[in-house]
Image (cartoon, rainbow, N blue to C red; front, side, top):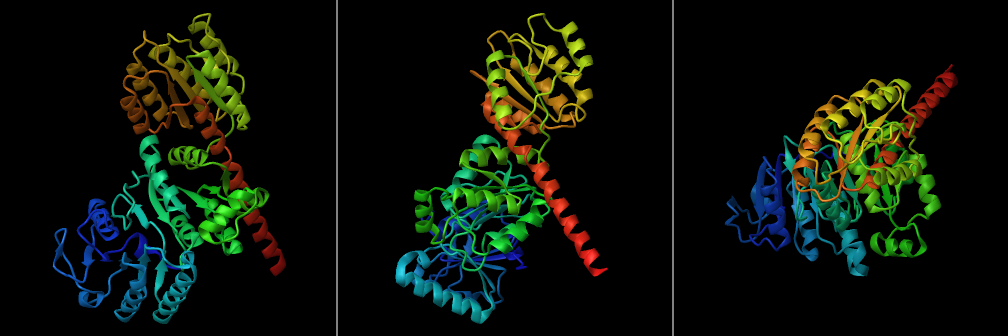
Length: 476
């Protein structure tokens, strides 16, 4: 196993090609490291020397003196081989190369690729990239962001590993828009040395990472990947979007990464064998990211759907069933209590329709009567909240947030319609650990994806125990 701590938690970083201009790659990377709160030693390297953004600049790696933990390379492709050699001669062992111009760039790029590999092997250098957008690991105690992407992950337990920098940037943007607890973002690039499996292995062993997202188009060493993924997926969910599953998409993937993509059927088999939860769209990958960010252990299939509006309850029920969720009938004591307390027009069933004029007392009564059956009858509570003109939603949100905190099972909440204080309401609920959704069907989709993980986890653990027993019997 390659030690990737110099890439995720370096104590010193040299940026070769650093500059003042925010529109240059070297300027963007240096600014990101500063803006991201890097706490270690930061060294701009530029032939002009002087001072860059308040930091003393050195004209070369040689001028720095002792080697640094990580060298980030953002110079012209034709200069990179020389930088790699200088790094080797000065004892620098870990390089992150962002520019392209290698295997994806025709015969000239292939020759450059071979030269850089040869030099790296000569000096025992580990290379990340090239042709990548960098790495962001926004750990609460030691953030690091050697990347030119324009925003940082907001923080949390989810990590993303992507063979596309653009898709990674979209994941980060969506994390801010949707309240996704994303902390780490890795752009794999050409994977000259470090590939998807290396990053998966590292993040799988990272205590702060609770779930992993993958965007992949191909895997070179499938057996190694599968072994690693199965080991990680026993304790952390891995959700994968595999690009190139159609004939045309496969051609596009080959043009992108230069490797053979999988067919749809091959991708299904690959994910099942590796213990991956497969999704077939970026949208569903982001939905999964949101859910697992709050509930990394997933959830069971039995849900109580609680709504104050009939129509949204109907479409959410349809989607929940399509996703493989189960809506069990209400326990008799719960049904009797709510029938006595609610207006006769309310539907005391599952889904539970509280009616549009429901205020905090009615929501609280539904929640309180459901909680004694949490875990034994219901595995999760999915709530739908339409805000009519005659009801103040603020007190409802306040009550539900407090009760959800003590529920002991996953709780999700969706709000529909015109929401005057949407940002405040969403932020309040999510601060109490409740993922929020604009779309009731998306909430049901999230529940369905989360419900896949316990079965994957149990299957992997059972397989490992069976293999261990067979090994013991063989020794005997």
